[in-house]
Length: 233
Image 1: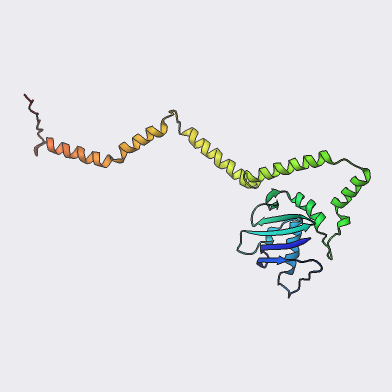
Image 2 (image 1 turned 90 degrees about the horizontal axis):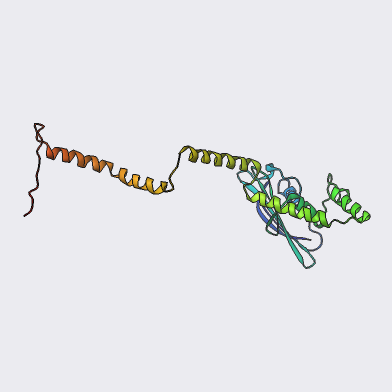
């Protein structure tokens, strides 16, 4: 049972938390109050297609979280829909795939509407009924799906969507090319550059000292004077 729903920046809803109790809950309100967005939020939690147009105007992303309780077990599903890029799904705070949300949500929520399909008409429900009737062992398939879920979650942590990864690859290639063209050959390159920087940092002072020295050893007619330091006894 869905016992708590939290919605942020979804359509006309800026931030709302709804606590649901047992029995029938009715949501009423005038047109534009956000009733449809509540249904949309629940749909997102159970794996429906995410559309960036549902993100509230002026916001970077929309976020929906739902807390479900079945017996003694508690499950928290979350969905984040960014203004740009692909949506992200979470199960109990960990990255998951939208397919996993759909699989879990199918057992938790049954959406009924004027144009919505009932649970028995979904591909997932029909596949489960067929597997049960044929007594199919799904152990290996479930293990492979779990591994795929982990790989997809790991891939998501390495750089976001494909466009973001492509931009990062281009940046890294540019940096590698810059380093290669610099022609670095010494392992002490940093120390050498630091010493050269210290030398060049006082170049103005060195030039002034040179001009002053030149003026001291030359007279007004351009004649040079040689100063000899007497030797000590």
